[in-house]
Image (cartoon, rainbow, N blue to C red; front, side, top):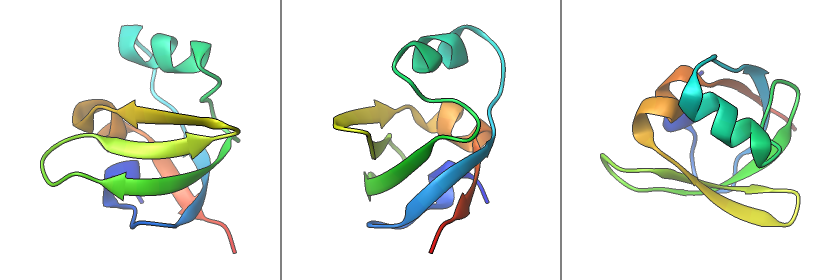
Length: 73
């Protein structure tokens, strides 16, 4: 599923990460394929806020639509 489809408190693993400038910036923050993260909340029509390690990061909707994740249980 897309990261933008995640629900609050979902624990996720990134399965696909796109290329390009916005993705490069997110990689600098530690987000890449194989990363484990938690969805903090999704703003309707806006960014997805995730927790990655000890950071909270807001991912823009267009980038979140390109990131594929699976729910980890």
